[in-house]
Structure formats: structure tokens, C-alpha cells
Length: 176
Image (cartoon, rainbow, N blue to C red; front, top):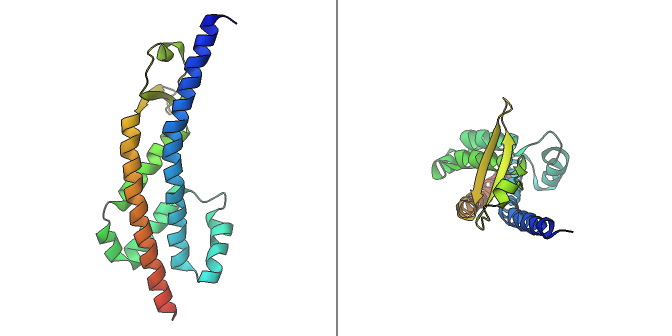
């Protein structure tokens, strides 16, 4: 194998490794958020013994998406827990932003072109996606952007934990 081929392989391997760090970190924060949304929905609608079955049969089903879960959550909060909506006024918008960014990360291809690799970036990856008109879109994702997005995820995570506790306690109090 030529040294040029080995050099390219090393560069691609580094970019892929950095991609796993960047996208992997974000997705690792989004998964618990999705589960918290499911928990809140299930606590609102079900008794403790039926809750896990609702999650496994419906909320883990193929027709459920995080986007649909957020719509359900928004309606539940608006109708039944207005005080929580006031406590977390930006929650739904923040969740929508997370979905959009997650979709960007999940539905884009990593740029491993010679042109990108030649720049020897150590702080970013470039993602390639296509819009509805077939236009190619490039998006650089830096470590600092991911760090900011991870902080947003942590804030949302704690808000959802608080909401889950409130919903669960209120539902259990009503049941007594």
C-alpha cells in the first residue's frame, strides 16, 4: 500500500473517530430525553401497573416518534398542568430544536472527501445532506457547538425529570 493511501486511511479514521465523539455524545443525551417524554405521557394516562405496558406496546411502537411524543406532551401540559407550562415556557421549543438537530446529525453523511481531509481540522466534522430540491448542503459541527447543545440537553433533561415527578405525584395523589 502506498504512503498516500495509508495517510488517507489515517485521516479518515481520525475523522470517523471524532464523528463518533461528536454525534455519539449528542445522541447519548437525546435518548434519555426521549424516554423521559414517554414516562411523563405514561404517568399521565396510566396506573402504575399499566404504565409499562403502555410504553412497551404503544410508545415503543413503530408509529411513535419523539416528535409525536412532544406533541402529546405539549397538549397534556397545556390542558392538565398549566403551571408546569408556565414554569418551563421554552420547553417545547427547546425539545423541537433538539429534534431538528438530532435529525440533522442522524440523516447526514460524514464528509471524508479529500478536500475536507486536506484541511486537517482537529475541532470539527462536516456533514453532507440533501434538501428537497436535490441541493447538497454542508454543515460543519464543531466541538464547541456540540458542548453548547449538550448543555441544552442537560437543562431539558432536568426540566423533564421535574415534570415527571410532578405528574407522577399528582396522578398518584388523585388515585388515593
